[in-house]
Length: 173
Image (tube, rainbow, N blue to C red; front, side, top):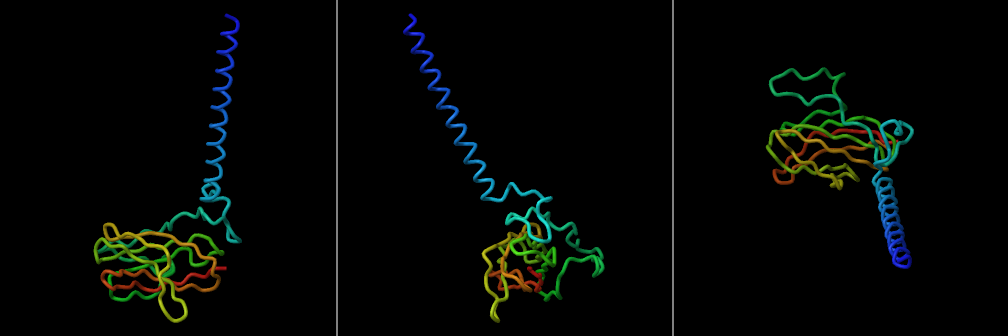
């Protein structure tokens, strides 16, 4: 009888050790993934001198214009340039960031639901940036990060309709 109880206790201890090892592996895996994805960086940890790659900066607080309402004065608008008459309007916020900090791109598109491509002006031509945005109910929002310093010229492009937005500029560095 004592031998049987000793065997049961041995099995229970082995099961508890195995469970503890599995829980530890899950915890370590979760911590590693959170750090790789930059999810451990809160808004307080990013600053003008250089936040984490995840950014943590909130989306712009200015609302998109509502059709039929007056648009905000130029001093209230995010950084933007003159818009072409395409119905595709882009705004950028903030207008200046550190390398690899979040750059928010928001806007409106009268062309209906579409998949827009972010483009950057490089060496005299517009080149696709590896980020897209979906237009839903006439608006879109996305964000990018770049380590390339200096003034960056960006726009949104609808390849299906061959329509480009206004150009926006953001200073990185």
